[in-house]
Length: 397
Image (cartoon, rainbow, N blue to C red; front, side):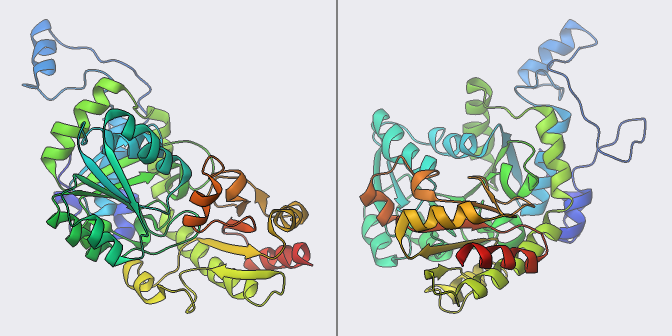
């Protein structure tokens, strides 16, 4: 894995385009795509040394692939991390980051407000292996302090949370977690690598669903685990990935590498559009509440601005009057904005979390995560914001 020495003096926008490039002798402009599962050796001796690690040589694309390495090196440079491992999806990244580290008898403390699949892994899958899980209100530092007053092996959180955009103080929680002996894992999918760098704020590990903003155009799946901890990546995560097989395909890695070239342009435009839409929705009688970290009435507005480079993010959540029926009626009237449970796309996408992304949670669990029957999550795209507002206006009418 690259130590990013070449890129350390480059600014983020340059890293997004140039980091990780290793041209073949053909001198191609675009990054090469290596669609191969295996590799050949000059001799049986070289094959043996490649498997023992005495010689640096690709052996199998489940372990590594030149296109995968380009994506990992570029994302690591953009994130400011020393090490990155790519996975087949964002959930593969989250699961591997936790499952590779935890064992029977360990304890994990997590924020209550999580993406539905993340909540299921921590609440239902890990406990089957004898791993104790405790959930807390992520915005309540006293709750974190209480939960971490006894030893723990891992802390997991996402900020902003999906879908209610709760903001968690990464610095404060990381300090508490480290005192308890816990590894801090932050899912940074909503904030993106453009706006927020959890490793600089005290976290130990960052995970991404690269399917979201990194691809950003609804084409493919992917995930990533990043850290500055070499022992964790090389001796804990890497063997887990190699033996269990949630590897990213070379083609998907290539698509995501190209997606990183434009991520700052897209996310900046999406944030601008999201703020304008949040301000518009705040004036509408049909809306009960608008939740957007970029609005000054968000309970953690100042913290969000500090952690997220002065932006509120690309997602707007709002509660409509009339519950599920009213939410469905509004969504069905939209003409430009598509109904989809994906997010971070160049196209604006809208979903009803209680019946889609978080539908496996109980009603009480949904409420604890900030989800009501009338909650709608809007992932704002890069369209002309005037068209988006007009579309929302006619649907609300």
